[in-house]
Amino acid sequence: MGQVSTDTTNPEVHSGLTTDWPQLPASQQPTWQDPAELAQALSVLAAYPPLVFAGECDLLRTRMAAVSQGKAFALQGGDCAETLAEVTGPNIRERIKTILQMAVVLTYGAGMPIVKVGRMAGQFAKPRSSDTETRDGQTLPAYRGDMVNGFAFTPESRRHNPDRLLRAYHASSATLNLVRGFTTGGFADLRSVHAWNKGFIKGPAQARYEQMAHEIDRAVRFLEASGVADAEEMRRVEFFSAHEALVLDYERPLVRRDHRTGLLYDTSSHFLWIGERTRELDGAHIDFVSRVHNPIGVKLGPTADRDTVLRLIDKVDPDRVPGRLTFITRMGAATIQEVLPGLLTSLGEDARHVSWICDPMHGNTFTTSSNHKTRRFEDVVEEVRGFFAAHLEAGTHPGGIHVELTGNDVTECVGGTSEVNLDNLGLRYETLCDPRLNHQQSLELAFLVAEMLDRGVY
Ligand code: PEP
Ligand code: CO
Image (cartoon, rainbow, N blue to C red):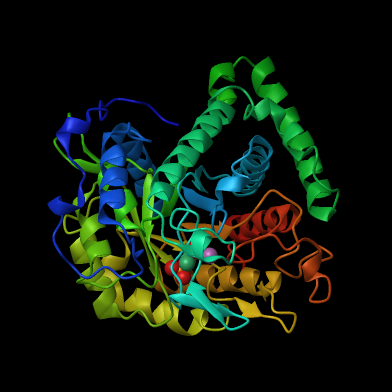
């Protein structure tokens, strides 16, 4: 995961405790019941080693600067909500394989460097539209992600439990450890592109991938035979982590000061984003990210206007640092064409130094009569097309995609060449939160996006 050039391991350098931060309104926060229990968890978290290093965050910022200039394309993908029970070797491996496959499809198809970012190793908290959930006359706190409470519908499980902050830290640490192993230890070797396709069901996207892997093999053999391929370089890939900076009692204790520069970094992840529901200009979340030097994302829904976006830029990126700020638009397939070109154009030069990424998932969710939350693959693709078209119209760069996916063969989103439809969604519906693209749908999306990037035809 990039170079390590900084010592951020000394917890003395920043206490990380909540008392250090300004008292601003913070929405979507847990309501912990026992202050002593919370204080104990926060002090343990503040003393733990950082999960990532400042130098790695800086490296990602330079990669995102290339994205903002149209010289690279970002692929952010992973679970809507990670769960502690799903932090297993096979789950992490299948997700990494899926993202690596998508990245290879995009690199090969579009001839562009792909900045690979997993929505993982920290994505354990969710914003909710309601604080409570009622089932059969019983009302309990809503599930807010495994970092806060449990999914099981019992009073004990739904209690907001500060010990879960520590469990989320350990699960993130274990995840990152395996991700680092996979991406630097030979598993991600470009000479293994075929192997990443093994173990998945054989659909049209997998067959197309197999064909492309043959071509890549030939190209790699040619480069090796010509003596120009660097075997060490082919063995490793750069891979970064990201999650929504939502629960401030998790993020704040993990802030550390970088000894080289004296600057603060949130060492819970390389990239952090602020969600659509917590991006209030005068709220604690935007204030928090404005104080740390990680590359930062902010989600923008269909109602985001020019004034709000300009004020977000001034708060989070007042110095206009290349690679610092990314807007992740999630407008909905039907709305993006109406809203995004005008917004981009109205921002003028200010739209050009930030990066723009398309989240084609969160504006396209609906609930079926069988009470499953789902998304149509066709809507996802349509939103990405609208995103490319909007940037073409405004003269800005379409910088990447941000998707909810799993390497497993689930039935959560409908459509594409997969067999998933509204009638068989229940077969393998496993998400505790939003519906994810399965392996086949993820690969298929990568092929379609590669074509859009390559041909400029949407
Ligand atoms: C998410 O990314 O899972 C999410 C909740 O997104 P948004 O903030 O865009 O609704
Ligand atoms: Co989601």
